[in-house]
Structures are given as C-alpha cells and as structure tokens.
Length: 380
Image 1 (cartoon, rainbow, N blue to C red):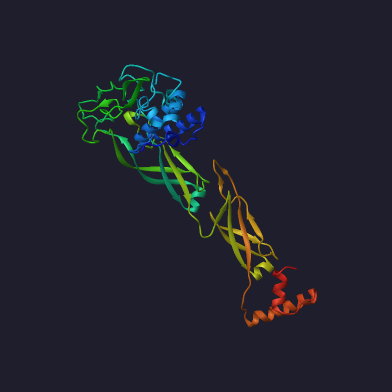
Image 2: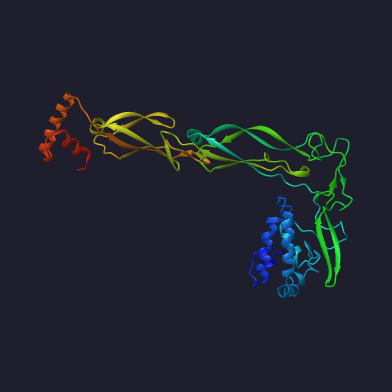
C-alpha cells in the first residue's frame, strides 16, 4: 500500500509551501545517494521526491488531496522528478546541497560531472594520556589505518598501461535523463547512470592491487606532539593524515581526541592541581617543614604551628601550564588533614595529660587527653 505523501515528508496536510520545502530540504540532504550510502537510501530518496513533486505544485496537490495517488499517478510516476530546468522547483534545493545538477540539456549531458576530485574523509583517533603527560605534554606514537591512493595505478583504478574511459551511457555526466510525455505535460526523470554507477567513467581492466577502487587501506605509525596543559576533550588536528580523496582529490585530516586518566595522588581543577596531606597532631600543634609530592617531584612545604584541619596551603606555579601559553602555570593546592591517634603509649599519655591540665586551667575544660585534643581540633 502506498504511503501518504504528507506522511513521507513528515508534514501536516495543511502545511504551506515553505514548510513543504523545508521538510524536503532536510530529507533530501539526509537520503541523497551522494551523501547516504545505505542500500535503502536511493529508494527512500525517490519516494521523497515523488511526494514533494506532487505536493509542491498547487494543481497537482489539489488533485492528490481529492483523489489520492490515483489523481497524480500519471504525472508523478514512481521515483519521478521535476524537470530541473525549472529553477523554481527542486533544482534550487539540489544546487544548495550538491552544487547543482545543471539546467535542461540533452540526455547524458545534465548534472555536474561526478568525475571531479573529492576530498577524503576525516578520521578520528582516541588517545589516552597519563595525568603527568597531559600536564607536561610530549611526543606520543600512534598507529592508524587510512586510505591511500594505490601506488600501482596512481589512484585511477585502471591496470597499468590502461586508463579509465568516459562512460558511453551518460557521456561522463554520471546521470541519465528520461523524458516522459503524459496528458498533464512532459516530465523528465533523472537517475544515477547504471553503467558507471555515477562515476562518469568505466574501467575495462581493473588494477590488480586495488581491485579498481584506486585506493587501499594502509597501516601507518605517526608521532603526535601533545602540547602542555591539555585535558580530556582536547582535540588535536593532524593535517593530511585522513583518507585520501577519490580521483586524486585532497586528503582529509586526522583528529586526535585526548582522554586523561585519573591519578591516585593528584586531581585537577582547571589549571590547578589538587592533593591531600595528612599530618600528625603534633606537627599541627608545633608546625613543621615537610617534603610533599608534586607533579614535578618532592617540594618543601612549611606547615605553620596551630594549623587547623581543612586548611589549604598553596605552592604557587606548581600546577598545570595554560594551554597555548606554557610559561603561565596554575598552583598546587594542598588540603591538610590532622591524624588523631586512637592509642598512645603510657609515656605519651602522661605528657599529654600534663599539657591537658595546663590547657584546662586556661580554658576551664576537664584535665584529660580527650578534652585537650578536642579543644585543639574540635573548634574553639
């Protein structure tokens, strides 16, 4: 059973001309055989054109609304197209998408030539980096597989000593046109040339190395320079390392997407590095000079006497270089926590109780270890 033309275009039955055109543009771009290589795309594309051809012309639309497909079947045959010499119709839409199929000429002369070189596809590669590699950058070696022009036939697809010939069916245009006269007028159907499959050329003797494709999948090792300061989501472009273009067209690019692995000791907040430092209660009370780990190795850090848990100490310019300006760096922020022992020796307890008594006289708190430590780190 034939589908409803409005349903095919995804519009309401009262859609105006602009809504029809917008719907057609969207669907034609999605399903045009030059863009969509799925097996069902060409049939879907023809179906979309049939529906738009019938609904874009007011008189034909009126017949369709009254009689259904039977009212337009003589003039909107399956897969039919408007004459592209009518630049007010479908042709202007195709020109905006694909460079235009040309005006009304003799059969085999219409449309842009599909034998022109085309740019190769861009490729994507996901690269994992260690935490420090992302901060300081460096060189990474990767392995990719991309299309390269066949070295045997130089990308022509023809056996050495021969060359592709202009297709005799479409005369190199890649498309064929068929005019049909109906009681409602003359209509032209345009379709991909069945002889050359739209390339505009035929190859009588195919290259043995590439099977006539003109290209081969080739593995390759590349060295990638990772700049300092990159982060997850940073994208690097490597020019001309994508797929080779068809018919010796320009090569696409390789895009390397970076993903930074987590580190057990450090975290990152923009261009700042974060870490935690656990000290003893005695170091917190008396202060200390400690060697702490940074992304560059150990650095001396001064712990002021009487430091409170949760205090953040800063090592300036020990963070992440700014991407694109490695001279400017963030800071290393260290959050201090105080370790309270659950058990102490008898000697330590005696000393702490003496200190607690002294502190208890000054604060009025009970003379015991718990009161002493609680007063220091439980908030005063």
